Amino acid sequence: MAQTVTYVDSFQTRYMQSFVNLTKVNSTLYPAVTTMQLQYGDTSDGTNPVSAYFVFDQWALRTVAASGLA
Image 1 (cartoon, rainbow, N blue to C red):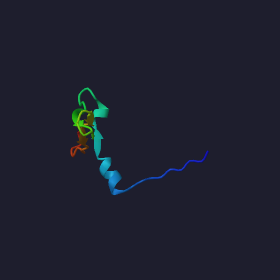
Image 2 (image 1 turned 60 degrees about the vertical axis):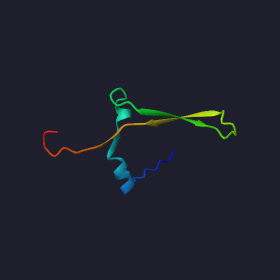
Image 3 (image 1 turned 90 degrees about the vertical axis):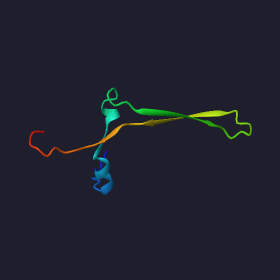
Image 4 (image 1 turned 180 degrees about the vertical axis):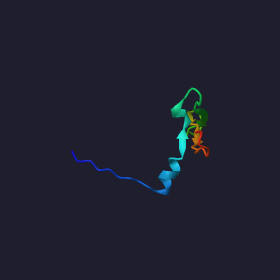
């Protein structure tokens, strides 16, 4: 089976790799923030409620230590 390796080096990939998803690293210390929104459907009387859930992970910017101790 043939394999192809493609190295992607663009501004978008370098920018996205500068962040780390803290929720995936340790979900106990950095839980995702969940919000719930209640909307009403498209019926004329407005009796069909629709619940929408939004989950926001916690992200942090990766930093590089300037000293030789890290």
